[in-house]
Length: 339
Image (cartoon, rainbow, N blue to C red; front, side, top):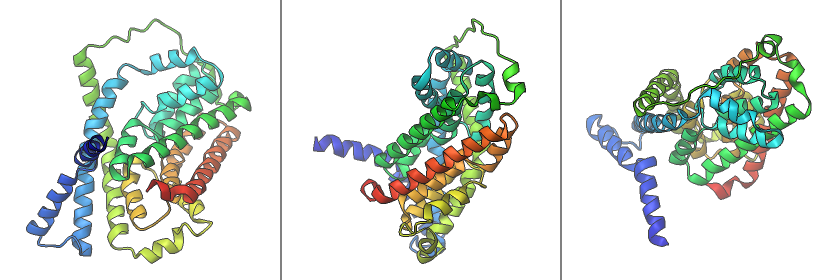
């Protein structure tokens, strides 16, 4: 058993945490730039280069593999799967299928419109809408590469629970009448679509997804890593803990409010989260910030306002906001056991 654990730990360090890459970047900084990584400048350069390369390498491999899998679940097939289910089971499946779509919150809204037009219950489509930007398979592995597998699974579990409960509450309150009329009046026509793709078509699709997602997220990764490097090496720990220390009752609230105006996906927030955890900020506070950025970003709310009425939009915001606060404060109380 010990040997199995040792092998798994070695693979985790080599494939996910990429300790070899960290050592390589350290050699580069110290020998090419002549800087010690124990200095602020050297440490910042090491943090930036290492995190950018690690995230881009993992992102390329993961998005390719997951997009190849996703080629078996186009929107039409997803709609057909969900259309055969009802109640809580449909909400759970909607949330789970959301994990197969590595989209930001804005990109998920066109699918939300398509599912609603196809006649799926609005609560099920909201479970998908919450889950898709918040939790995806690539984010699980990236979270594990930066923190550990326990934190990654905790994040995913809470994200899925929030998606299922949020969609279920919207279904229970019968909020269909608050969806914009242009969405509900033009119902999609059921057909017998052919989902067959050749292996080459699936490879091409996966490559296109890698290129498309890279074009959308690369700038946010660079910004996120830059902010993370600044937090990790330049901002005094006492400043951060004075504002976001887990001993403060308002830390999770502030982190959530700060995250809402930002627009990024989980790939851009991970470096910031890593730096905050290293500064001693509570796990719940950090994950609350990540969830707010990915699930409640202001641009996505503006887009969503175009397809739902104010009452449904307000309910959606309230469900996610309260859910994030509950998750954040709960994890701050028990988070030490996961680090």
